[in-house]
Length: 108
Image 1 (cartoon, rainbow, N blue to C red):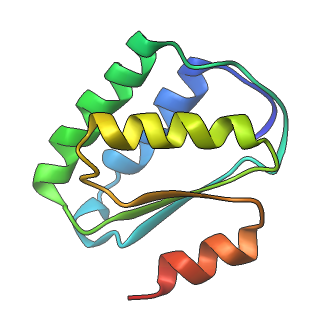
Image 2: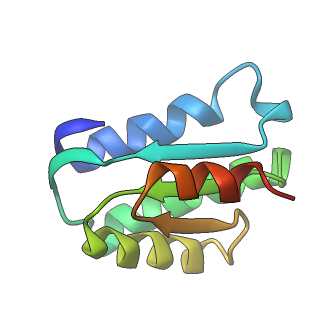
Image 3: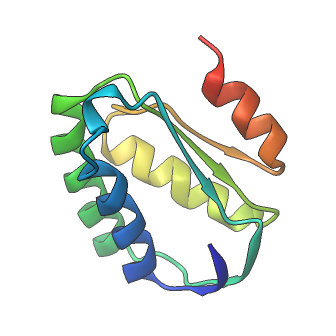
């Protein structure tokens, strides 16, 4: 993701990987937001929308890890909030560097 990211961008990104034909074999997802200049704050209602789609997807493919990369520490609280709304169905973690996210995502 690059530039300004609004709520619908995040929803679209989530729905893209959840509807991919390879979804059943997916092991990890990395949201690389390191090039994002501005991330629109996520409202409580928006977090709930993402959580609802994630809970449904987790019933189909429960082994996916989600990594979010960004220098913006404010995004970390959104990642944690969404994870808590989904009862941590997908392990989701925040990383300041892509290399750290990939290392965590690919590990067992």
